[in-house]
Length: 327
Image (tube, rainbow, N blue to C red):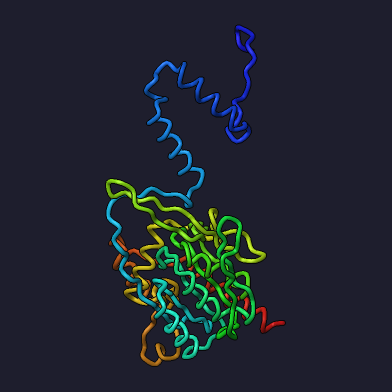
């Protein structure tokens, strides 16, 4: 109880008040606040913009500086243990669809990992649809672009899928825009497992408009809607298998995979054991390993870089294949 027996009322949220009451509250504030400069017209404009930036999140951004295009990220592919094939799409451009077709024909596999962590933000929804068509059933409505509640265009799958095996899509907060649409479509129509961390939430058509002094404003002018699926914008996709990993560790793993191959960041070294060849040669690899470890004791060990998210995706696909064989 306060000493003067005052009653304390919780401040209502702005959303609970009608517009007329809010306007009246601001007028009272401007006329009576102790520091008029803090509630000037400019201050209110800044507060409005800041509030909208926080409320609309990825749907409204004010950008400054140069608008230099990102360098194109390459397409990568590699066979992994357990009859799993790995594909990293890189930048979403039309030529990547051709690369994907070639990889799916040349390397049939029981399981496929599609890595979308190194795919820059883009609005290439046509390319996203073409990639999704390689996995989704023919005739299935994929998504529509909706503006002001009206569907501008409905995109469907117009071909038979090229791959129908077990599928895992690896994502992170850097998975954005059209890449998020691919992930959502493959989960919805191809039973893909989404592995990793929650995506950026930019599954919308974004347009930039110039402002004075070189600034730009980026606005979500159209929403991508996938039938019977949760919205991508603004909250992003939640993974089916969540893997908590730091951005720095994941970036290190992606860089090493690009240099030394994906297998270098997922395959554990097998422990050396005594075998027939060693007996014939009169050696003992187990003792030699222990002696080598003692010799290097105290020396700084090279840092091990592992892609934990990718390893989880591999494990999931191998497990699904084992369950299918058992059934």
